[in-house]
Length: 130
Image (tube, rainbow, N blue to C red):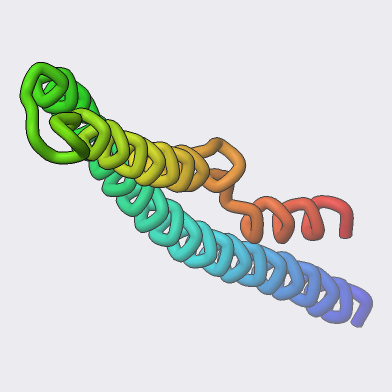
């Protein structure tokens, strides 16, 4: 009789271990799904940051072209009593400001703090502590 109850006790422990393993596997799958979602968001942010950085580079190139154009107009005459260069320098300052803004936005999206999967790390910490 003791042998039968001991066998049932071992079966209970085996069942318990199986359930623990299944729960662990389920938790691991949930963490992988959460990480996948977070990395997709990070990839979108990297894409946006790259677009802003490229736009800033293009506007920076236009800014340099406008500066060169301003020097060319400096030698000309007409507008503003022959001072074309004033209009060109004003446009250069505006384009430079826009390029600076786009560069700041792009680099902010590409910063390391935005690339870390915060939710996954928080969940892992909770499970580690709990």
